[in-house]
Each structure stands twice: as structure tokens, then as C-alpha cells.
Length: 163
Image (cartoon, rainbow, N blue to C red; front, top):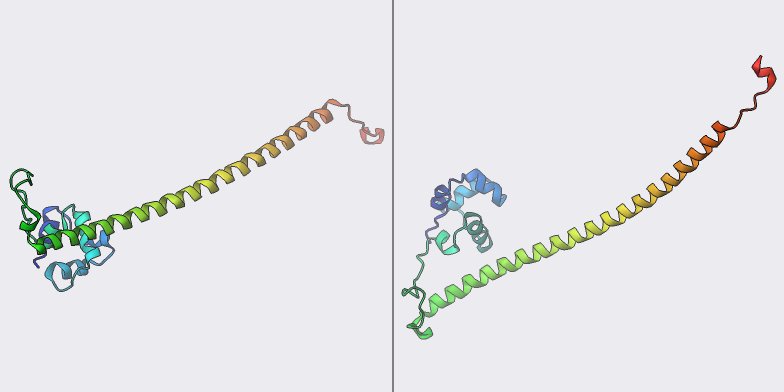
């Protein structure tokens, strides 16, 4: 298998450090992948291909097989004409992509659920704050009325204090 990671990364002007950051690995690990000193897991192959916006086949250096050379017209080909290993490879890759997409979907569903819970908590907090503001507003109005009543009355000052 001729991994094209380095070639594709350089074509896209992405440094080892940048790719390493996106994958949460060290730049040295990226170098090991590129030189073949470390093997990539299928999950990591899919993740890298998504980051670099290339197919896993392209990343792995596989030549795309043209099953439909006549502008997508497949009427000339029979299923029995397709080599079983090609079909198995295609099905395997499709399965990997589906698992990846399913994992992403589950992650998004978890994020939505978490966000909904946070929104519910914020709504409850907002309701509580509004109630407390109403109580404080009422208390303030009562104090204001009391102050006006006290300031409008003539204070009674003992005569010995006036001297």
C-alpha cells in the first residue's frame, strides 16, 4: 500500500504540525505515518481523508476503477462481470463510510440533546430571575412609598433638641 498522505498534505499546503493538531497527535507521529513507520487505523484513515477532502482510496494510493466508462451508463455491465474482490472492496469501504457517518450522527444527536438540556436550564434560570426581579421591584416600590409618606409628614422633634 502506497500511502499518499505526504503528497496530498503538501498539495493542500498543510504542515505536519497543522495536521497533527487536527488529529490530536504529534507532528512526529504524522512523519511516521508518512514514512510507513507507523500504520494508520481504518478510523484514522477515514478521519484524515475527511480532513483532506479526499477519498480513502485516493489517500491509500488506490487507482479508482472505472466500472462505468461510458459517462455513467451502466447498462452494458452485468453484476457477474465485476470481479468479486472489487465488489468486496467497494462494499467494505462503503461500510467504513457508513460507520463513520453513523458515529458522526450519534455525536450530533448527543450535542443536540446536551444543548436542549442547557437551554432548558437557562430557561428555568431566566424564569427564576424574572420572579426575583418582580419581588425586588415590589419591595422597592413599597420602600419608595414608605419614604414618600415619611418625607411628607411633619417630623415631630422634641423641643429640647431644637435648642
